[in-house]
Image: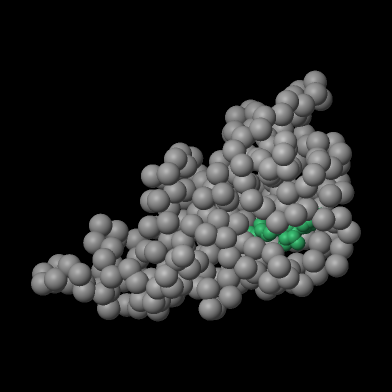
Length: 260
Ligand code: SAH
């Protein structure tokens, strides 16, 4: 179990200069273990977030774009205040209505996979992305850093509204939040360079590959053999055919149809 830590951590971030607290210690500071004088989440979060980014890089995330995006988005602003101390740990956290915000390592991994789409190489960047399962809006905010437009759809009204409230202060004008059943995709925003699902189904909804552009890529958790959820990557080829690859086991909340 993760021990809750006090908001004033970490006490040592000697090598980091990104946190506003970093400059608060004088060059001649006698002890390197003293806590930064600037404390509280507003002041410390950038440094704590950089620690998370360093861990993601150490664990294999290579894309500078993804690492930068993970470093930009204040994950602590997307979780309940009681969970803020855990916001930069590599753990999923409850966001209400029995749903969870995905682990940072899974968010980074899936977005890095999206950036491997053939059309990203062709166009020099990621165009329109559809996210199924907005939840609290965190992943949509990360996607907004790496994609031209983000369409994110959520089937639970309470979470759709929570995401609106969470994202408003960030002023990301390339994120479009939609309330509806993402199993149907969102044809008006397509075709998409990438589709990413944050909930795992028994089979692939036909609308998703249909709404994917040629050269586009879909990344989704999907139930495979023996009921185990696996990460599925589907590439749409220029002739309209699709190539599927099954990667590692994952644990996502279930994909459900309809709205509630
Ligand atoms: N990306 C989210 C993770 C949310 S968890 C985040 O960063 O917080 C997955 C979400 O998928 C849940 O909110 C769940 O309600 C939603 N979901 C499940 N089935 C769905 C569907 N058919 N359409 C839209 N959202 C769906």
